[in-house]
Length: 141
Image (cartoon, rainbow, N blue to C red):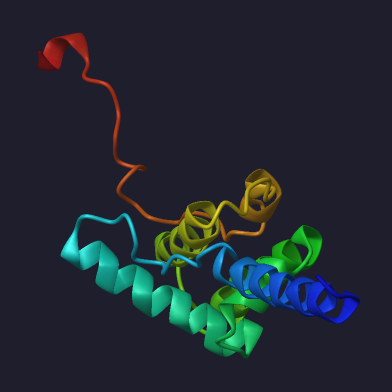
């Protein structure tokens, strides 16, 4: 075997490794992957696309997943603030948006988002449903 032949084989092997490496790049799962309910899929799709359009301003999911965690956290907090202040959404509505975003990052193994920190930026829950709940008095039983 000559030097030229061995160099050609090495070049072919490197090209194969490069193409194999591109194929083995981790797959990006869609936001609705792993969900069972048809209605949840619709709500998550709408909420996540709203996040991409209004806050991220890009549909490139690979770039989003390659972004540093603290930048992603600040983008999510910015989105919560936008939903609260500009769109005027309530606590429960913003929670649906947030669940969709968290689901996307979780299904794509983008863990360690500081959920507790992010949820501190949610507006106060002003629903009256829980305000009327109380335990029964003995006389009522």
